[in-house]
Image 1: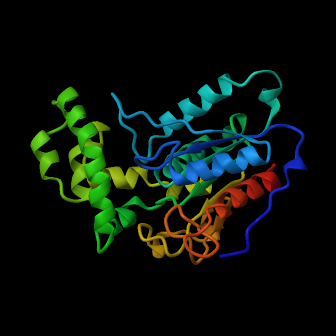
Image 2: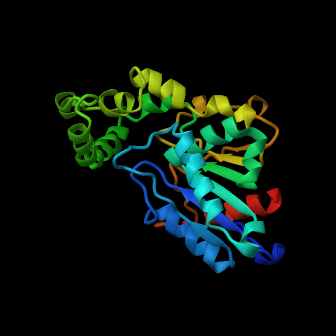
Amino acid sequence: MDPPLVADATATSALPLVVLFHGLEGSSGSHYARALMLHLASIGWRGVVPHFRGHPRAYHSGDYLEMGAMLTAIEQRMHGDSAAAPRYAVGVSLGGSVLLNWLGRAGRSAASLISAAAAVSTPLDLVASGHAIDRGLNRMYSYHIRWALRPKSFAMAARFPELLDRERLRRARTMREFDAAVTAPLHGFSGTHDYWSQASSRRWLRHIGIPTLVLNALNDPFIPAASLPRQDEVAPHVLLEQPKTGGHAGFLSAPFPGDLGWLPRRLVQFFMHAA
C-alpha cells in the first residue's frame, strides 16, 4: 500500500462536513466509521454517521430514495455559515452501493446536496459479489451476517406475513437464499437475481455528475476483481482507484495489527482536491 497520506486542514477556512453511510449491519461504531470520525475531528472537520432504518422498513443495496431522503434531512439541519460549508458523502460496502445508485440517478443535481463523494469497498456488480460471498472461506462471513440479520428478519416476517415466509427464512443457508426469502419480496423484486441486477451500481457510474472516488482493493474477498469497471467505462467525474491490497473496508497500513489511518487520510485528500 502507498505511504500514509497527510491532509492539510488549513486548505479551507470553512468547516467541511463528511457524511458516512455504513455497510450491512454496520453503524457509527464500525471500525471504519470510528477511524474516519477521529481523523475528521483531528483536522477540524465535522462528521456524521446516519443509520439506515431497520424497522419497519429495511434497507437494501439499491435504496437510492432513502439515500436522497437522508442527505436532504442533513441539508435541512445545516444553518447559518454551515450552509455554505463543503459537504461530502462516503459510502462503505452496502452504503457505497446505495450512494452510487443515488449519484447516478441524480447526475449533476447531486451538487445541490454534496460537493463530492467516495464509495469504498462497494460491490458494484451484486451478481458477482453475491456468488462470491457464498464460496470458500467467505461462507463464514455469510453465516455471521445471516445470523445477525435473523432476529430483525423474523420480526419483519411477523409484521409482514403477506410478504415474508417464516419457513423459507428459517431454511435460508446462503445469502442468495436469504435475499430470496427476505430482501427481494420485502422490496418488490421478483427474486434474488432481479434484486441483485436492479440494485447493482456499476451501470450508474457513467451517469455521475460530481467528483466521485470509487475505491476497491483487488484482493477484496467479496468483490471479484473481474467485476470491477475500467476507467473508460465511467463518467469523467469518477476516479477509479484499485490498489492491490486493502481487503474489504480495511486498507490497513503499518506492521501487524495494522493502522486504520490510511483510508481516512485518502478520503480527505480526495475531497480537498475535488473542492
